[in-house]
Image 1 (cartoon, rainbow, N blue to C red):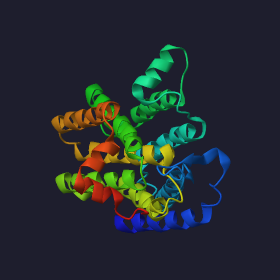
Image 2 (cartoon, rainbow, N blue to C red):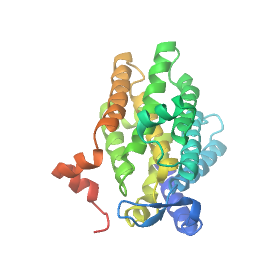
Image 3 (cartoon, one colour):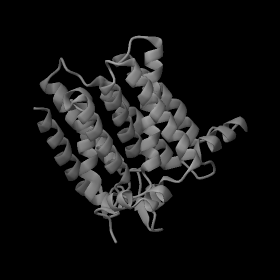
Image 4 (cartoon, rainbow, N blue to C red):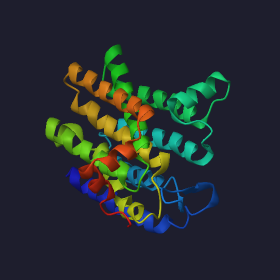
Length: 271
C-alpha cells in the first residue's frame, strides 16, 4: 500500500502549493529566474511540509515503522537549504569559491550548508551501514547527491526530472521495494506535486527543495547498494564525479547542446 502514501504526498503537495503560493511571494524569497523574472525561491519547502505530514500520518498508523532516516535527511537538508535560500549571496560560487572564502575567515552560507550537510548525512549513515568505511561511503553518496540536486536546480522542473530518471533507474536495477519504497517515493511524489507550478514559473524549488530531493535520491541509491560494498563505492564515485564536473563544466550548456536532453529539459516549460 506504499503507493497510497505516495499519492497522499502528491495530493497534499498540490493543495499546499495552491494555498501557500501567495504566502511565499515575499521580498526575502524573490530571486531572478533564468528569464530574469522575479520568482519565489524555496518553494521546495512545500514538498517538505507535505512529506512530513504524510510521514507523521504514517507513523500514527504504523508506530513500529518510523521512517527516521528519511525524515532526518529531508528535514535536515531542507533546513540548511532554506538557510542558503534566505541569506545566501553570489559572493562565492562553487566548492572552490566557498573553500577560498573559508580560508579568508569567511564562512559562507554555502560552506555552512556543506558542513551541516555532512553532519546530517553522518546521522543517516548508521541506518544503512555498520562499518566505518561503509558509513563514510554512505555519507559521500547522500551529501554528494544533495549537492547534485542543487546543481541541477537551474531551470524549471530540471531537478525533479533528473531525480525521477535516477529513481526509475535505481528501481529497475535493485527493485522498487528495495530502492525507492517509503521516504524516497513519498518525497519525490511531493516534489512532483510542485512540478506544475514550477514549470509555469510560479515558484522555484530553491536549495530547500533541491537539496532535500537530492538527499532522498542519495538515500535510494544507498538502499539499492545495501548488499554490495562494490556498488556503494561506485555510487560514491559517481556522486563525487558529478560534483567535480559541476565545478568544471556548465550542465545547462551541455543539456542545450544535446538534443534529447534539451527536449526533455524543456518539456512542459513555458515557451
